[in-house]
Length: 525
Ligand SMILES: [Zn+2]
Image 1 (cartoon, rainbow, N blue to C red):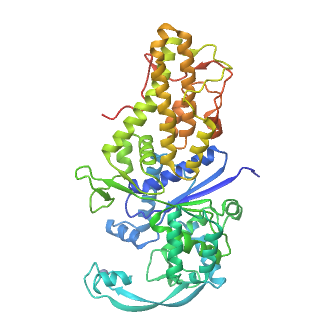
Image 2 (tube, helix red, strand yellow):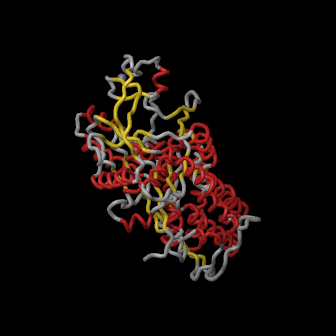
Image 3 (cartoon, rainbow, N blue to C red):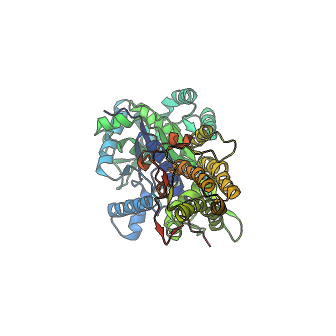
């Protein structure tokens, strides 16, 4: 048995009818920072992601390409995971909803809800297009004057048997749950939207069955029907950790600590999902965090656009990664786009942020603090063993500063955490170096220059620890450029909260070529 605190988090699962774009990646990235931070802090983390495959969009796309749906879904799952890996996303479980395990566990769940009396047979009535073979919403009917938006033929009124989930039975319990758990829906603005929606419109029972579809999961108590894709998709959050076939793992991780989702699907996650769980006798998740969207800055017109295929502005993560690096990608989105609200991507802005903060600020600091000791002290600052560095940032309470960064990370305000690290810490460290100019001082007072370098290197130790969840590889490169005693795999945020002496003289351990260090962030020209 482990006594480590456990942490279970998920992202939304994606429709694999097209490859992931930078907006999809934004969510995974924000979730990854949290997972990495929790692992660092000693949590036993399970991070679940997956693809939402049991939808007609997927079978249609496969048919267009002339491949079997399953083969198409499997290939897309491979492509998605390739992108996530390239972005250094550290998910522990990746679920395909077309997998046999998910299907089995999903059927067990729906059977349980049925046995508990929360599913009943009824009739669904609505506007139907025979060409599309699907029902259109009341809104689509009105907007298109009764015609199908695709076929321009009249929609017909049709009613068919279906199964309803008694969502309405949970309305009071949901409102009470929001009240008792004020952090359940984050950020606050999303909570207010949901509460007012439920209070004004109320919750209606929902049709959770579909008729006449070949692709999808059969309803166990009536195999004529398949399970509505949303009902099945939400269940990945529990089937992925063993619901229905691995009780011990499921009990270990459930209830979920945070579901990371896009703000457009808040209602499914904060109303339908807890109600489904309660109907099956399970606990509701602890938190749903609804992040914002990434928009594209059109650099010719200056307009800010939604990412869309029809506008032809889709940017794939691999495009950015192959031009620059995964770390540059991570830094830009985490620094520039506030996770709880919306952000923008533009190539020009990307270069500006990269050059000013990574190349000129952090990269330059590292390069100086490696090069000067290597050139003038044969890599070793003799006599620094056992000495505690002096503070270089005037008036900074280090413990308080690290505490504030930590609060931003835990609150998923990653842009504010990074802003704080850069503005309140790295920039003043660079100013300290400029003011003391050890590259000049070394020629007149080698001992004094050594003290300046020794003090400033401490800032790299602190910054690299704080940056570990954000830019893990670069942070590791920085940290391991010196002989800091705590192994990189064991550092925690608390290690950054104080200036530390170390048993040995400070030494540069970075690899040098002809006395020069390879730039960590070569400037974008
Ligand atoms: Zn139609």
